Length: 240
Image (cartoon, rainbow, N blue to C red; front, side, top):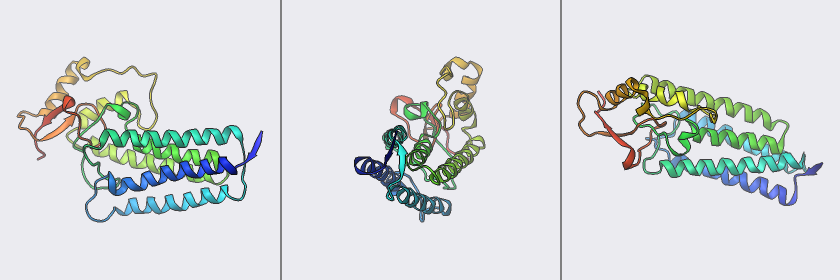
């Protein structure tokens, strides 16, 4: 069965996509931390996002035909993107995260909440958003969805290389073993660091160091530069 994306379907497609896009735009200054101007890479990504969203709207308004099932699936995807985004914001609001392309090493990790599902829940919410717009609008919007999926995957990989070269490399390696980067691993049995014996001791040594003066709060086994709950806090020595 085909339908023209008009009326209530058009309104929902535009409304939910605008809620998501405005949420993402708000986070640039309202949630993520940056010093001075927004990094050049982030500005390019923002411009590309606006152009691609305009293309999405252009594909909808001429009375684009799409199957009922695909429109419904796209609307569900937009809703999931918004929920995942704000869930991650709520989990990390106690500490403003660094904006993508910021030249700084990670100093904290998360493993609970959305970070128990994937290592980069923010980027996953963005990818879900663009794929959902492609499901609804079809045609050339799939090109945008592919470009942004690869783009966010590249950003995530770059950030993970920073973890690999930081003092949290062991903690992040253990976290990687049980949590997917952008895709959940429902088949993977979750285990705690306390069960890993020697690795657990190495992790504690890496986090605490030979001395343990209070400095930066670190959540054992998480992802991203986030301040953990009190119940999860461990301390580590200051950076060299």
